[in-house]
Image (tube, one colour):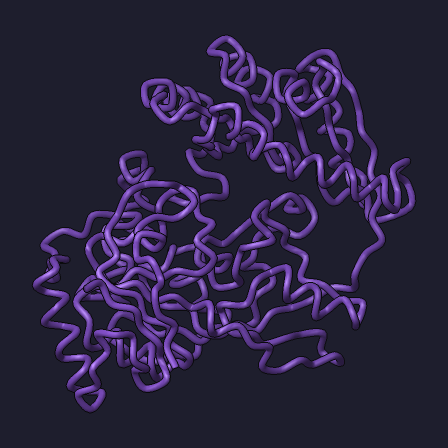
Length: 417
């Protein structure tokens, strides 16, 4: 039976805290149910773990599809070292399952405890170990998606780019076949450095070492905030015994790394950004951030920096993004575009995304308003439009009364009364 008394307000935003409005929430359990919902709904927002930081799961007066109940392991092939899973499975849960076979999925975003595989595919997640393992797309064998026409599609490697990294605006991720690696024994070193040039030179040197899997950076202000010395710090992770920190000491330094953003948010710096710059431009960018008194940290091995701002620092954020563009960097290195960064997309990128969107979601039903603003929009997301679409959905399901959250062909719903 359906879950009752779920507060819709919890579905009206995500980790970005950008306000939205969830008209209703549906918990599908199969591709067929998702297809039915898409065909008969006016507009849909897709939600995994809700860990996105740019508003990718914030509904704009529409239905939310929560994929958390689609979290099964479907097929595990030890010989081929692959696994097929449903999109709602959490990364940590997947790796807990794989640990008994001494295997793992190697892409490790900061939000790994609540990140779903579907969400990682939608944003083409990077994470701390990108210098060794790249993006999520590097580890995808195939996908099953439901596009904006309600079609259930099997997607091979040649067409993954139509969906992976498109932030859910072209299809709902349903299943994914993933490549795996042997679980590694990891160690780490903690370096204290006094100058930005030392930081840049150290990163350049360590990137050449084959056993280095991550290079994490912490600025002076943030180092002091989390109880470290008032210096720049690099955490160098090795997939070997080369690091001095092993076992519990290794775990402790990684737990400290994971505490960085929560500590900054608690200190009032809750707006986190994710520009990407070349390592030779890093000192210049860091000097700009320090001059503006903006704390920062990041995955410096791949050039992704996380400047953190107070929520009302919109002018500072805009100036920071202008500076990133001056350095020929990227506005978003890993969080995506969502609602928050649409204005910063280049015209050439918008045109490419528009073509892919039109091909897969011609009526603009999926993650409406995210990434790009669709011209000549056919669907208008309004409560009245969604009520009419939901009535049609109920009729197609045999007239089920789901106002009180009754099951909808095995999909579960909570409705805004």
